[in-house]
Length: 526
Image 1 (cartoon, rainbow, N blue to C red):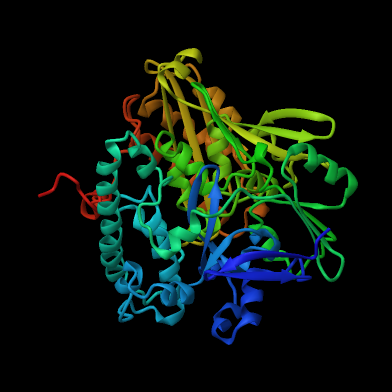
Image 2 (image 1 turned 60 degrees about the vertical axis):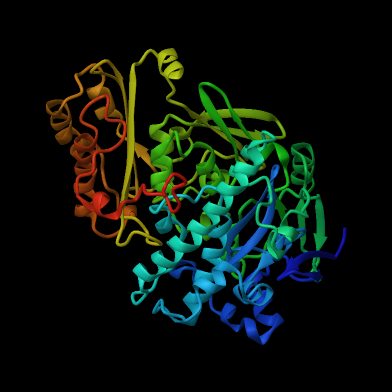
């Protein structure tokens, strides 16, 4: 085993030797240079400490903003890290630096450094094209005094400039039939100091690292190697995005950590006519990029989950394995009738997500077993026809003290499959009201075979309130949570009153004023 590895820090090679496998990037930076003292205090629930990581994801080079307090040092091997200080010093005339000059955002130096990292990622995002996405990009800015309009205006100018650059590059690439590489970010259209270094990155290599205290960190490249390591070190802890591990790294000792990030079989996805199979080690942001345009509820609920720096690291498999009782994604996966594929030395097995969580707050995962992938059914015309239905209506809702970085009171997801106007199947799922996510089975059976109309939904509400219990594990506000069980189903119906209303109807005028669908740059504008 080797006792060292390297990664790039602000454009220079950084050698790590015998450093603790439990040490976070924020702790390392704090001890590296007095200029990084801001990394000494970390609280993910207050926005964390955003930095930018450069990485190769399949065949695409990406900048992703991450929380420096929630990533362990060995996970950076072969990657790039850019701090706000490094971004400013490397290219002072970069559009992001110019936009943030003057400090007129009223949120202090600490949040201004976070803005630099967040806007830097947004500048290079090939999918950030519309005004409504700014809320997603800057949702980790938790400050009561932040000048949000000023942040939005600056972001709009920066993101418009990169969209114009991408549009001009696509016109040139169209002649050779390569315009798709521009719009998907597989081509370096910027040619600046940051992207030149980014596009030199290669695939992750297997890593076997031991620190000064003889603790080990492994990053295998295949499932076969993964299972061998788990057999050799049965007490080892699996890690993927490690957002939860990063939070506990100072409280728990793990003699061995086995990373799932480098396992190719866990980092790939398969799309068929009927479903998506998503590798367990794929971060949530990438999952949204894969299915979000078609499965709108996933994009919607993901924007209420933690913050973008966390979503860029947290994985679907890791999320399920932690079995968070108040998790916002579980009800949607249950409503979509998703399945989880589990892998162990004995072979594979799969189960519906609705059977994955146990009533005591645990999961059906056995020792030595890992989540391999999650299979999510699609609702294409052919997929619906194969299921014998004509339409599928699905949506999800979460209620929390604030929009970002807050523990929800309750989350609900509903999926109604119809044959014309008759309910063929109903799946109603909740989290945050008990020790584990659950489905309202009795109400689902009641709805099946009935006409999808207001009368039917209102007849189901008393049964819903009676049969779905709020346990003490749900925490405070029990009566409020009880009310939400019914009111969220009502909201679902009023936003989707007909089989044709796949997109939710706005119940307020906020969408009209915000102009969320307006692009930053309109190629046909004069």
